[in-house]
Length: 321
Image (cartoon, rainbow, N blue to C red):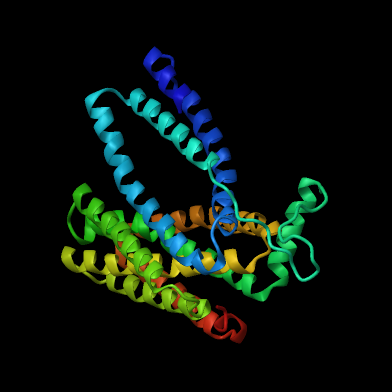
């Protein structure tokens, strides 16, 4: 970020250099996100994973709102390259904070060995295969990965192309309407995460997953027919609430039930699958956008309903806590 800012101030920044910086940033982020999720069980106890994830979720949503606002203010007062310099300083401060994290002492397992102790070194390919095998061998994890793919497909396109189409065509609005829809989604997710952290405990995650799919299906069906901005904002707010609430317990279940030695690998598999289906969702929704928001939201509602029913059909998944 600092390099982009300095090149911009020097007048040497080109589109290609910006693309290279974005690619490098994405590569680093691909390591950061699994590490961010997998380190939490080594920092807090299992019984406090849910409120800890709630705090992280709320922090992410608040940052998603404040970040663009601060960036826009910096650009308005100074110049765009300065915003990259400010971003670089923020990352440096984050690195300082992360460097001060201290993990909990590792507890001995049933055999007396330390839980999470380092395994013998293996090749990169072997570690990837181990993560895939671990995810495939557990029907609960397989289901979670499939559901995550379905939910990612059902929100990547509808929450981007769908919101834009809804704002412009069905609600006869513009960028302000689109901003309100995105704000309602983020606000609802933040409230849902807070509620999840306050509830605590270990609810049946499988039932929560099925409930979220049904809740989002209902919301998508409403958005496909709504013609009033207030009703649309209320619907999106409630959908966001469901996403934030279930997300707290879903992530906590993954962190609590997957062996720490392979946790980051399983999360990486989940991320890769999400990256694979998201572009497909955008393409499909883009093709349907010419007919308005109704068809794409209707298709999404059907897919989410099928997903929820599939989760309920598995006794093993229903019993997940």
